[in-house]
Length: 283
Image (cartoon, rainbow, N blue to C red; front, side, top):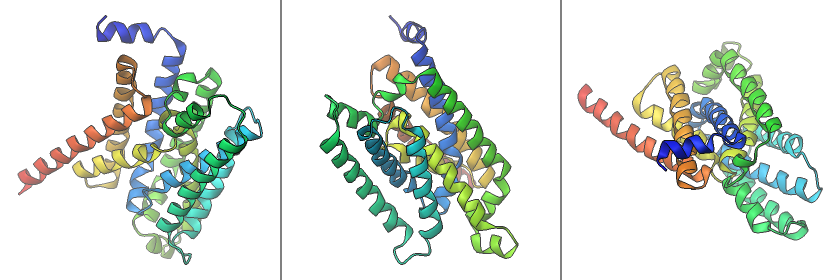
């Protein structure tokens, strides 16, 4: 069978179509705030919050909560708000707080799962949660609908508050001086980030979420300079890499999350070369 026949055969299964739809939506949402987080020097907030989500999932599994989405979302949103509101003003700065939360949540989550889990395949459960090895291919129609709804909300919020997000990203002090309620918009950013993290765990797992946020933004920054151009390029880049990663994983049988991140890395190196060529021509 050639590549097209393999893809055609696989797309006959609903779960493969669900994975592609959800993957595209998650990649789009992840890229929207990537530029903002990189410019605010909070690139690793995705990593920290994803580990918080892992800890929440561990607690939900011990409590035998069938639908863990509400608990995970609530805990992740709370931690995102605390990080963005206090990280830059506390005695312990934002990057240190993120590192503490990241390592602490990951360790406690695994400890809880190891100590209290009744699963016969603990290693498989942990691997799937950390690397997203199978969860994207086990989505139900309800999961897909929920992902679509949350993705629409995230995209609408970003578009609606685009100008304010732009203002607090580049110069929060100036934004406050001109009457912008920076605290409210930082809160909106925190909530959006938390929703994205919870959605992305199904796609790439908690250890690889930062890649979905950082690589598209950094790749776009190599080729464009304006905030709007970088954001649009980042979104397109992220969606294309997600689609290619999912298709390659289907054809080659590789883990979905790791494959998408590998494609992101190749895309970043390509963008880096394009950026250098543009710079050389400009001179």
